[in-house]
Length: 243
Image (tube, rainbow, N blue to C red; front, side):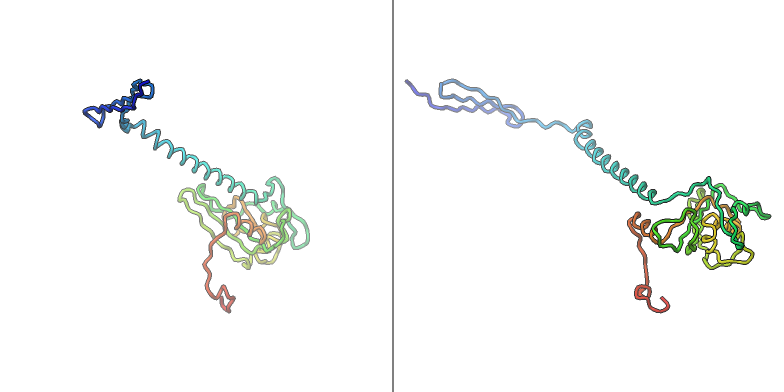
């Protein structure tokens, strides 16, 4: 039997860059095997191709990131709101006057000679910090002194928030008491409702709501917002006199 030697004959085209070329290969059985090879031409970058391969993946990644941030913010907001204990507004709060009698606060909310200043774009709220270290509040907020008394005014037209601090040892007339008392005692006598009336009568403003917090829950509020940054002096850190 006559053996056939492998013979490769390559015929190259005139143009190597774009046209295909043929390879003829003789196998062991003496048959000629043809193969066709060509260089792949690069497709042009059309708008559709750019959108599908570049723009669309970027948009999907951004959508996932933004969606994750929104979900985290909603969960964080719900976590903060869960720390608030709400007082029913349909109750008629009372307090104890100087005669040790229980009276309704509504008896002292009659209109006065000088009407309060009103502005539909301005909303006032009372912020109170009480001196209680208990983990729970009383039902009506009484029994504790108001260490911090602040009025927060939200101006929707100007887009501003302003805070006014009222000194806790200011002497004022508290409903149910004939002699002036320290304003922080109003919280102990009748809770935030009585303190709100005292401030409304003296500042001639309308308070649309209030919120109060004690030492223990103030710590939880700070933790809920991931802490706060404070700048203190050296004397404040080391408790030096005058610091």
